[in-house]
Image 1 (tube, helix red, strand yellow):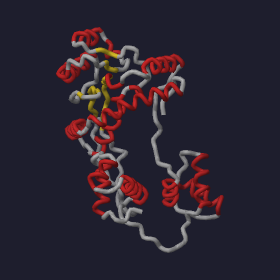
Image 2 (cartoon, one colour):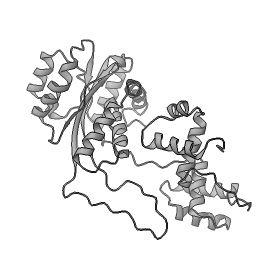
Image 3 (cartoon, one colour):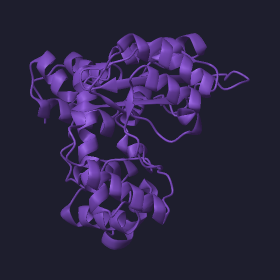
Image 4 (cartoon, helix red, strand yellow):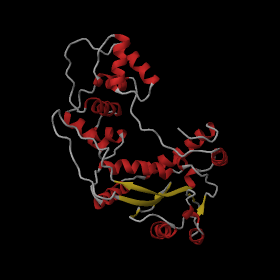
Amino acid sequence: MVRHLSVDEKLAIVQKYYHAGSKQKTIARELHCTQQEVSLVLRQFVERGNCERQKRSGRPSVMTEEVKRSVERGIKRKRTASGAELTERVARETGRRVSQRTIQTIRRRLGYHPVHVSVKPALMDTHRAARLAFCREHQRDAISLWGFMDEAGVTIDYHRQIHWIKQGECRPVRESPPARVRSNIWAAVWWSGKTDIFITTENFNSAKYLEALEANLAPKLPLDRKRFVQDGVPFHWTIAVRNWLRSHRVRLVDDFPAKSPDLNAIEYIWAWMKHIVAARQPHDRATLEAAIREAWDSLTQTTIRHFIKHVNTVMKEIIMANGGHSH
């Protein structure tokens, strides 16, 4: 247990991790504690919903090895099993009645953590063959000489924000606007730099893509040794776009395979940014755009390099999967 950290320090850890998006290693350095202590505080917050030390009643623990084995068998049998289902299973197999909160704690102690299903593009045999050929061809390339660019949509998420309330308190209500608030963004990153973020309310097409390139990529040129990755969206490859890239001496990785967002490092940055933006809790278009810019400005070159290096790992996984999805 983490005992020497004060409640204020523990709250600071939770704030920095979930709201400021700081890494555990950074938090540990700033608060002069170990990374393990930071991890334990975050786990305690998830399991209990607070940062206070849990008081022990002195009663025998219901988390016996028999109960733990029953829970683990239930999880392995059905990965989506709810707390109620696991509670019933434990009662049936061991004769013990445990709460769903205890089930949650056991799951954490067994090393399980919740994740959403990873939605990935459906792959046909031709896609797998192209991905496999690409990874075999480029697995030894100097990935630090690649650049990555793409666009994405960012919306306000009104439904997944969690509020902690007591029994009998009313559920918070937020009125959503009549139309979904969405901003479309574009940017490019490379080993030693990044463009500014381009934000628009319009959908991207060839003309809007050229506007983003001219406004945000052109000021960073020339980047003579770089080769940029962009996916196969048709407006990326129009004659007008290709002529612009050629006239600005922007070289492309021209054999980038279809259905391969896992090979474009900026896709991981978009996921990272959306987490940061959601933590800012934007409520209208102005606050959404401000949160996007703040998240982009906080994106360090160290983080960019981490995601770029990850592409090498993905290539190895795709080769192992014979062109299939990476983990």
